[in-house]
Image 1: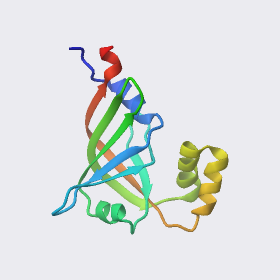
Image 2: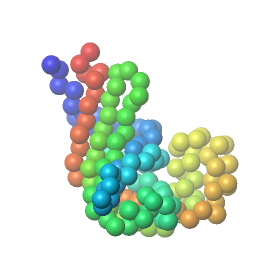
Image 3: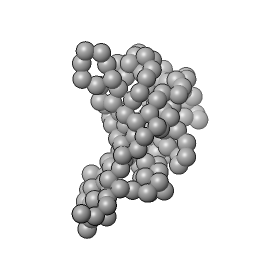
Image 4: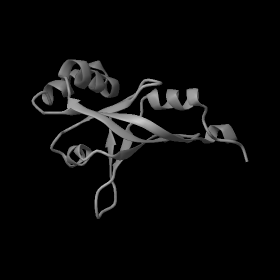
Length: 143
């Protein structure tokens, strides 16, 4: 069987590409909370995303600890990157340097600006994740 693992450069480029990620946060007495999120990552850096501080995600993230995150390609050939890591910081999100660029990344400039204006009154926090472990698969390597 072909080796479907990604190299370090491949996995970092894949994670830096545009995907909706799925964040998993542990919680006591229940299954982990898993939720889709917009995110940003630059190779060699930390992964980060925005969330409401009083949302269920935000409240669970304040407890700290390890979290998991997956980004996937949903078309053939399928591929995914799963990372496990630790929350390194939670800070107030800045509208112009973080919220608007994130909306542009996912919605384009025009729709991103409209989304940012609609949600400008919402409070958000930026959550940074230090990546400790990687699990990768690219089924295109087996074709």
